Length: 453
Image 1 (cartoon, one colour):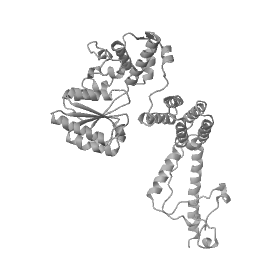
Image 2: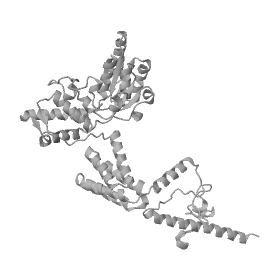
Image 3: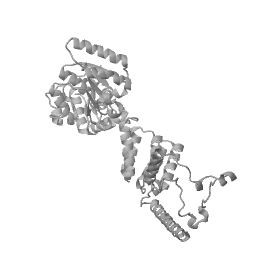
Image 4: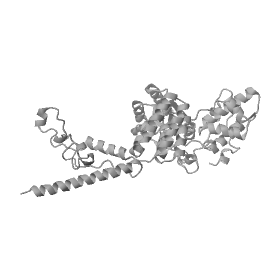
């Protein structure tokens, strides 16, 4: 759907009353009035085809707040001429589900089918979701669930297998401007906004149509109180609180952004790293959480290639603990920049995971006798510590050829330093020591041959 189509003057919307919130009063009454989701609702797209087929099916609508999930569910009921029952998983329980099913049975007795809409369906626990299964399977209700969380993790697989998942996207700035113009024409014709004011509202709506209309409604009320008909950017800044971006501190958006920050650091892009760090701060992420992740990045992605990275991360954390926000935020930002430009190595991380995996799957092996502790005479007589070579007494403080693994393990090479930063020097040293081990093995073999009869 083009923005022009969305503003078609033939598509009239209901006029709001004083008691009705603007977002509810302007809720679309047809698919053609829906702003956004053209990838699902445009001609030939999945949801449009589903509506046109006349055959409803259960579905999960997954997307951020304010992108039309509830609207699409209501339009589905109208399009298919079904009864509409709405539940909120935040406030509903098993009793409410049973009552809804009784109503659906009553509807069927009147030859009416039912769409059951469950908002925030991810809030239902496993038993509550399981309670829906028999009714969905029998066809008593067509389920439409709405969620802001990844349904793969939050919706039971049995229920998920019986519903089609549709991914809804944030409303674009262009689409929000279309909605803003429509709202002014249909509900607030006496009000005008400067271009800067419109851009400000769209920016702070952050892809959320409901939030845009709420902000516009607040601005309109403030303008009416002040006795003005034209709103500019300064009026918005004075009249509204415009300091909260959409940010779910425990949801997908949160983890997507921390993932972007981590990957930007790993990818050695300081500007992108700083961008995502500031995005998370701006969105309300706990700086102490970011502090812990920064320390993790130093260990996981830089490691021994630059041990100073861990020192910088720890010192930034200490500075934040002492200063708090906003002063301590700069210390964390500096740490992010240092990690981004530092040489990268995950050799230690990879080695640790390989060693742990081996130990978990391997049997318990005895410590070789020469490595065992020998604090008493009896233990020494039993061979503990026998033939152990004290490295400090050896050339280069290295006991070439001495083994340190239990019998049967061999000599795995879990840690392989990368040729970057300090690890390039570490790699050279390990290579030298391995050559000494190989030489010691050859010398031992030659000595054995000489001693043979």
